[in-house]
Amino acid sequence: MTAPDPIPLARPEIGAREEQLALEVLRSGRLALGPMTQRFERAFAERVGAPDAVAVSSGTAALHLGVRAVGWGSGDRVITSPFSFVASANCLLYEGAEPVFCDVDPVTLNLDPAAVWDAIDDETAGLLPIDILGYPADLPAFERIAAEGDLGLLEDACEALGARDSEGRAVGSREHPATFAFYANKQLTTGEGGMLSVPTPELASRLRSERNQGRAPNMGWVDHERLGFNYRLSELQAALGVAQLERLEELLAARERAAELYRERLTALDGGAPAGEGPPEGLVLPCADRGRERRSWFIYAVRLPASADRDAVIADLAQRGVEAKAYMPCIHLLAHFRERFGHHEGEFPVAEDASERLLALPFFPAIVEAQVDRVCEALGEALGGDWL
Ligand SMILES: *Cc1c(COP(=O)(O)O)cnc(C)c1O
Image (cartoon, rainbow, N blue to C red; front, side, top):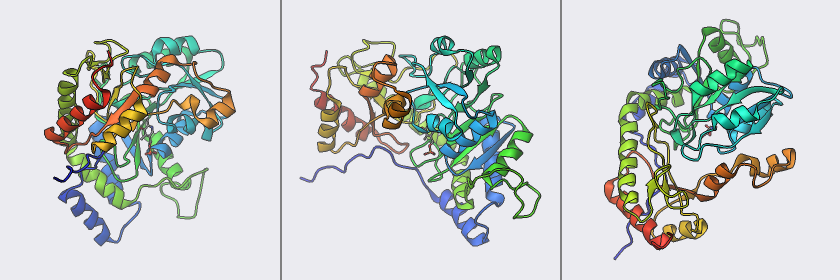
């Protein structure tokens, strides 16, 4: 008997439409700064309900330009989450600003507004919340805090295309810039790529100049009116983006269906419950949507029982043909943040506990029920059913 095929952690959904539009670009002879990028930007802005959107080469590039757009620079202290992908803090360092971390909410794992209030002092220049794991951060609360303290606001929505906040607004549609990312495991992929949703035309035109070596929109190729970067997205990547955007609803629905299958199977396991609904030291599943908030499913990550050995579980799952991955280290505990800012264990207990226990399971639009069954059975066996 041959072993069944291993189940990968992630897999992009690329079809005939992506191929067709990519081929159109190849045959057009226009590979950069052309009509496909504009088409992608317009369609994206419309989808998220923003006045404009600017395509860039990665989510990290979007964050860097976002930091510059908000105006944070040397010595500015910006409050952000330690439970995020490293780029959301690195982007501040690029401009000489300093990330000030505070702890996250144990249910949503997003920056906790109460902790943010406590962390604000005279030196605080802004807030950089992240919609982590596709769950919308409490942007209405952060807007109130920012208005009161005259603080800048940038939202890292790189994991949350399609999410809605507590006021029912699409992530990316509020009055501050938000960043998106299109790496191969995101809800929408262009291989590599990113986007900023922007509230004003003036900001959009400045960002288009900065991503393109500081060139003015209508000036000659060699005229550079400000400091710029090469953060352009290619026409080929934009073609993938246009095709993916056309079927975004279908891709998001497929992810939601997969998440629901996981929830059903895993709540049947001993002690399995969504965050906030079961014992915090048990098997903690992603939280259910609260009020008008809507998660956009990015990955499916569970917090293993506190007593489990995560490395052993990952190795056990691998033996059973299931790819799983620890997700993700706290930013303040990464070597260069420890060395530079003197961070250490114990500063942000909620974020650190989540980071030590989270395990990402195979999750992609085309995953089938039988695969989810196999993953959940394997997880149950790897955990041995004796953790509570
Ligand atoms: C994916 C991601 C980014 C940006 O990623 P790139 O690989 O640069 O496109 C930024 N922040 C978060 C939270 C992410 O998940």
